[in-house]
Image (cartoon, rainbow, N blue to C red; front, top):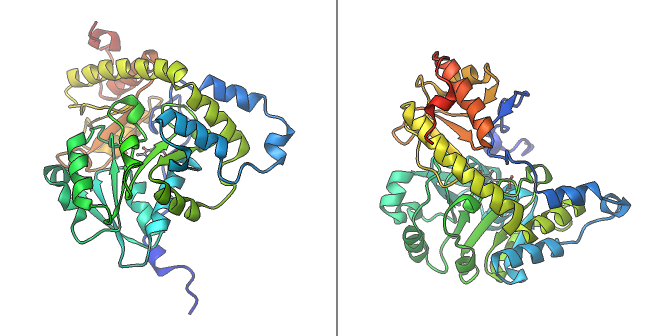
Length: 364
Ligand SMILES: *Cc1c(COP(=O)(O)O)cnc(C)c1O
């Protein structure tokens, strides 16, 4: 019998979302302020070599820029094609066989558990409420890897630093690899990057896809102890990040205090206004430290609501049963305020009170 297709791949599906063009797409948490201008300039100035020659084996310039950005040694940085790739490599470095499993607090980023199955491991989810009450719940049964998204997607909450400390303490120095996914840390929260490099089983992953506006380039990186990074890079392989992506991401990282800081602060201001506007509409938005807000699906049916709002030109992401009380929710990505007004208009029109202009709902 041929082992192809893999029996354990039977339940897997391709990632799928409706990506047909729409006037405003605030469904995927990419940067609605655009791309980092210095990175865009690198892409515009690309020469022959940028495309014709191989990049560095392990993206040395990008490693250096990421190390400087985090204030850690270069040997403590791994890079990849987006943080999905970093996570994939870390999972592969841990995967020993079908008895191994990954534990994650849910709801969370779907790749956190999907990548376990893709790498031949089991997946165990622990409800966030249980995990927050006692981080040891994530260690039950002896996972080889624990995935924690902080701030969490899609809820936007930040597990407290003391909670992470307790988790790392309980996991121990020779326990599971604990991955802290900091995809949204630029929008709020305290990073564990410097602490991760001083521990043997902690990895912090970062992405250039959100605050830096480079989702199309596919660049991510991770911080950890040199011996942990080495294992991740063994699983990664050479020549992974393209020349242009390395160069563009490196200049963007070097300018984190400029464009990124300015657009993040505008994003945070929009988040406060959007939170107030959604509260006023009775939709119980969750407090968020990220660049998105999760709120109740108005009719209780997230898929129907997302389709309805889409029919008015705005795409948001439906989450079936993922509001903290188990009901349906919608997630909207923050955008410059005129675009948020466009979203609120579509939401109001869909809900059948088109007379209520978004400006009336705004505080200040
Ligand atoms: C968007 C996102 C990422 C980014 O993945 P890339 O592969 O770097 O684009 C990683 N983790 C979480 C939780 C995300 O929401």
